[in-house]
Length: 91
Image (cartoon, rainbow, N blue to C red; front, side):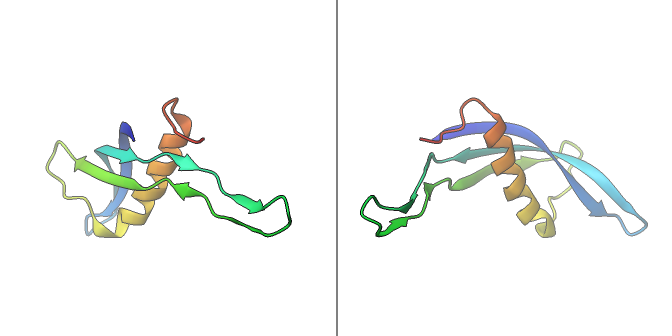
């Protein structure tokens, strides 16, 4: 399981305009084991396994609470962040 720390920028509506707020994010990601589209004999293969993300911490130093509507963006960001890192586990 790889452990990551990074900064995620969320767009938050403060009532007057959308502002960018930076959050420090700590998460883990399990290794990804690639699947196979087809077996040698032509039978259907199997999908990728792993790649589960567990968010450990999402912190903003000014006390801003992380908005629920940004959760999908955060998970996408975690995958992209992990792919750029040397620890990214894809076997």
